[in-house]
Picture 1 (cartoon, one colour):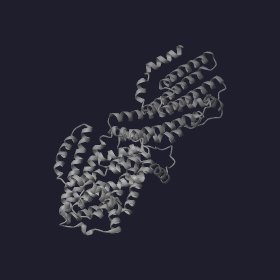
Picture 2 (cartoon, rainbow, N blue to C red):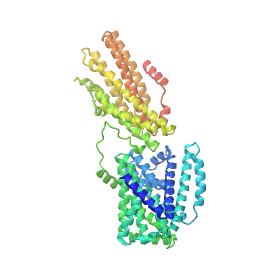
Picture 3 (tube, rainbow, N blue to C red):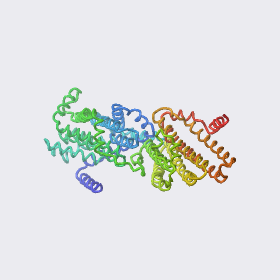
Picture 4 (cartoon, helix red, strand yellow):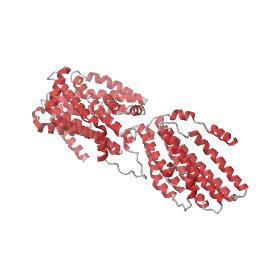
Length: 601
């Protein structure tokens, strides 16, 4: 389908080139303009290495702040499409909620109308080609520099230069196009004209993937009387509906939240378009009144189109913005999230690949998913369930009272719950990690290590399982007690990590500090080995059993240590106070000193 559409467009363009030299100029102008848009997007992407993401997170905690962010970003970038792609990506990675995402869409819809004002108010009234040349020269100069930010500035300058150059070529070519074909002869009046030209605007925007390009064509054509003002209004409506396709395409690689946002964008613009079509006469009158008050000449159809474009999007805001929460409820009912497959990756969508912070956050969330599965395997090994960790029941009693044989297959659990997700995380990091600066590369490296610690914890659990299963049914009660103690210390450690995690998620310092957990691991290991030595010396257990206990207590120590290292990266390093907390954390030597002090007391 896509190839067939491309072939049709190529054939139509070839016919147009044969028909008129002026058409070549118009097509070239559109191409240069679109290339300028691509350069602008490339330039702004250079500044999405953390700064834009942090600004977005801090300015989207309310609907109005989200609206303001969308308006400013679309005004600066002159691309509602890029803002939509960024928003879909951030929403899929969990950096935004759907309410904030819809607020951004409202703001970007209004922000993108500033481009029409610039085209109509400046681009058609002065020789903007003279301004394009210096921008291109300085832009190319910056692009050839090594710094990422300088390259980004270069792409922005060249993008602006090409935008202005494209506008110049189109304006100049449209002025000569009348000698070949006068498009005004194909004008359509009434409802038929409204619907036909709205459809043309939608199709043109979908093909060019830019409502700016459609607006530019429309404003330029109406300024030289190639199309009628009424038909131009319909083209503007079509352009606003067609621009939602960019978000829809971006949502293909996103999760359900990203798809809901694309659905919200389509719903808002489509319903606004239908509303404006029904009341097109009233909107035309409103444009005339506003134009008079702004000092816009009656004959200046281009400026009146820019006014209509803004009024269109303001109507959408007035009608739909107060009902964002209701839209979210509606979209959640229409686009139902499938029950997540715990055995498959949930957050590693392709939509995150273009932005460093969304890559990092997607990997972190997927790593937490892996952590949940790892905990499931470990607690099931000892005959417990994850919900037992949240109960007030004594874990020790639960372990001691469970005298039934426990035959949990760790290998099967690993194949189902760990291997596929772990492989996907490593592959995702390998694809994305090499393109980012040191800050993101370091975070991805830490997350890779965190996942490695989780896998190591499961392997250590498998080594421990054989003796634990055998000796917990021993005839020697002291042996049973020590193996139950090993299981108890591991699941208690997991419960403590969960408390530690909950404290961070509640924006409080953890109830159980990281240092206390680290110290308890070393102290428990020290005490365990002393007890084993005492039991051997007092001949309460055999030396063979004692050596097995010593080896298995080492497995216990490694399991606890690996789980805590993973938790430190997944939960503490991603928290807002992680930097301060990390600076206060004791090093290895200090922890050893604390343990020795506790032991001497």
